Amino acid sequence: MTDNRKPKQALARRSFLQSASALTAGTAGVVAGAKSALAASADPAITELKDWNQYLGYGVDAQGYGVPSSFEDKTIRRWVPWLTASAESSVNFSPLYDLTGFVTPNGLHFERHHGGIAEINPAEHRLMIHGMVEKELVFTMDDIKRMPSESHFYFTECAANSGMEWRGAQLNSCQFTYGMVSTAQWTGVPLKWLLEYAGVKDGAKWILAEGADASGMTRTIPIEKARDDVLVAFAQNGEAIRPEQGYPLRLVVPGFEGNMSIKWLRRIELGDAPYMTREETSKYTDLLEDGRARMFTWVQEAKSVITNPCPERPVNGQGHYKIQGLAWTGHGKIKRVDVSTDGGKNWQTARLHEPVLSKCMTRFEIPWEYKGGDALLVSRAMDETGYVQPSMSELQAVRGVNSIYHNNAMQTWLVNPSGEVENVRLG
Ligand SMILES: Nc1nc2c(c(=O)[nH]1)N[C@H]1C(S)=C(S)[C@@H](COP(=O)(O)O)O[C@H]1N2
Ligand SMILES: [Mo]
Image (cartoon, rainbow, N blue to C red; front, side, top):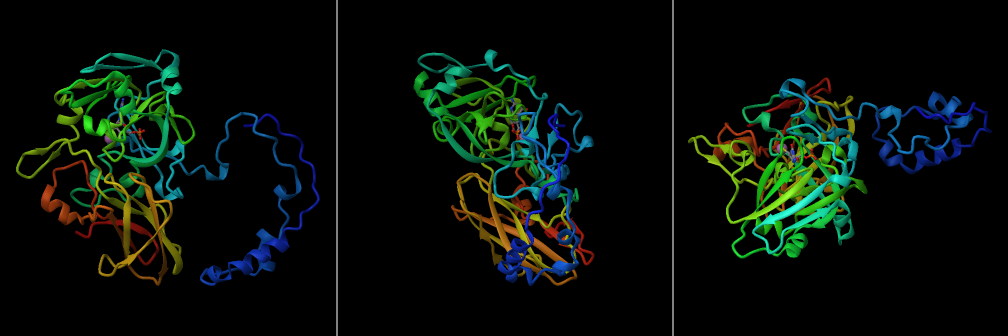
């Protein structure tokens, strides 16, 4: 992997045992709950001298771009080959249970493409603004980067996240049922400034955004939203947007269904009526019981999921754990998350990790003692508008069971006596 490996040389042994025992004393309260704390003298991880403590490590990274520890090679995106016809029009799900905080590392952000990942040379990329504007504009990437910019943390969730679960628990997996949501710090130029340069003509009510990929993805966005918080982003978590996230330029439409955040953005047209594209008529509509379909259901409503424990992260015997997970809402900030361990009979309010940001994922956490037997873990998010995440039966009462999109119902994980965790439906 690296080409600057040197023969290993013995180093003097560092005196690290003292600091190890000081650490144990400092965390005694927490450790008291641990199942079996080995005495230091009986623990080979402490008593045996390891290679990494005796020999020089590798030199500075010769490849120029760091990668995670080789011990973390199971922390990866995964896809379900039978779910879609091809890898070019597919989904790669984020491993939510291996993440901490609320930022999704760039290599683990979920991916959803309709025509594969476009490989765009930024020198040949342009953004055109035309239609009902005073002057039509064409921007190079250099033009965009010279303009004033802003950085914001926003979640992106595909409207089809948890879409397989409408009629009952399907996949026994947190990754495949919830992994189409991710959060990044996006840097770019607020779209409202570009629209100001162009001069919006009276009567312009809608914008059409179009991607430069093979799918030529197009979506209509109301002008009020375009003039609010939409970003024309060129960076993601401090570096250029990754190819799979829309390099070199994408739209970020905070709080709205992910489909509207057009990647590989090349064109914005202003008009006086919605454009009724495929992605907002045939797709991304919600078929109701009476045969009518809801359209333009943009906002991703409050939703939460327990990421640990979960089917991929079972419980290892009785004892003290923390239940943690993620909550988000397209309407602003998460106000509260309640957690139940008995299927919703009793609830406790979880602690939210700061900062709690608008239209961004929020991490919640609560201590839990598993006393054996069956436990039914549920989380319920509430947002700053007072909206409370519904149960599946409440959601089905208004939407029926034909929908694919916008399933934000509460999720239940059943912890069974062996410690395994199962995806179950409580109603
Ligand atoms: N040009 C273009 N933009 C696109 C798509 C696409 O296929 N092409 N997929 C959309 C969908 S359905 C979603 S959910 C989000 C996913 O963004 P991500 O791949 O960065 O997670 O991008 C949206 N933008
Ligand atoms: Mo999507």
